[in-house]
Image (cartoon, rainbow, N blue to C red; front, side, top):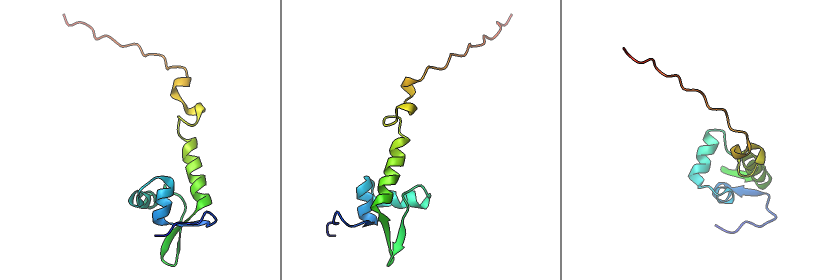
Length: 91
């Protein structure tokens, strides 16, 4: 495998997996579940556009509470505790 040039807009499957920090098998599983980044076949090889990979990563980053303060559970008011019902004592 050769290095991909920075100007290349496409990545093959194995390099796309490395680009997003996943294994090729994990990326196949994401695609099978229709949860992965958009891809297409080119000459029998699965290819990914770098722009689509960046958009997919940004969308997942926005869903993470560590990256999105609005989703941080520690910044929200705690839910009130529910009162426990006591069972009547048996006579």
